[in-house]
Length: 243
Image 1: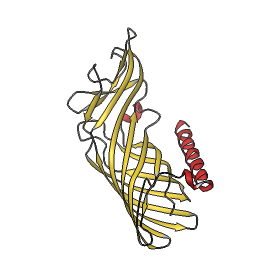
Image 2: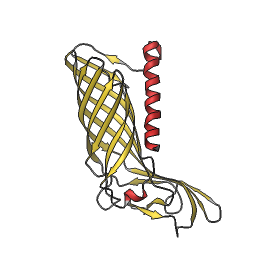
Image 3: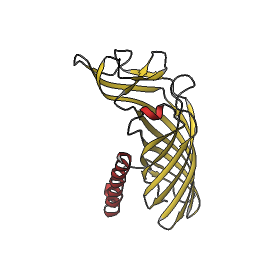
Image 4: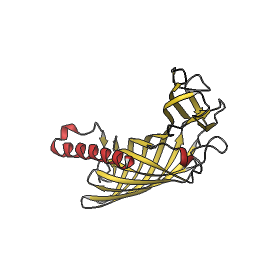
C-alpha cells in the first residue's frame, strides 16, 4: 500500500505539472531545443520517479525496506524523427537508486567494498532510523517511440555506468548516543563495490506528457561476493515523454 501511495503522489505531481504547462507555456521546464524536422536535440526532456521490486533476492527479500526507489533525470536527448508519429532517440540520463532495509537490520560495510546485512540485535544499537544503499548512475538509453494521437508508446534498452555505491546510516546506541554516516562504527561508507556496467530494458505508455513505465534490470546490483545478489523490476511515473 505504501508503494502505491508513493507512486500515486508522484503521478499527481507530474499531472499537475503537465496541466500547468498546458495553461501557461512560461512555466515549462527550462529545456533547450535545437533543430526541427528530421533531426533535433533537447535538454531536460523527462523526469521519472519509481519503486524497485526485488527479484531473486533470497534472504534480502526478508530484510528489505518498504521503499526502494529511483529518481531519474534526463540531461540531453538526440532525436531522429523519420515520420511525424515515430522517433528514434539516444539520451544521457542521471539516475539515483536507493535500497533500504527494515528497522531490524542495517547495511554493514567491511571497509574493503563489501557490504552485508547485519541484525540490530546484538549490534549495540537500540534503534535504527535509516540504513540506505545509494547507487548513482550515468545512463545512455536507446529508444523508439510511436505515437497514436495523444498516446505514445516507447521501448528501449539502457546502458549504465554505475559509480561506486554508498551506504548511509543513522541510529541510536544503547546509551542514547546518536550515530550518523556510519562506517565500521565511525562514519560514512562509500566505494561499495556495485557492478560498474549494467543494462536494462524498458517500456513506457504515455498520454501527452504523463506516462507509466516499467523497467527490467537483469544484471546484479553488486559485484559477485560483495553483497546480496538480486535484480530489479521497476514501476513508476514519468513526465515529458510525449511525442
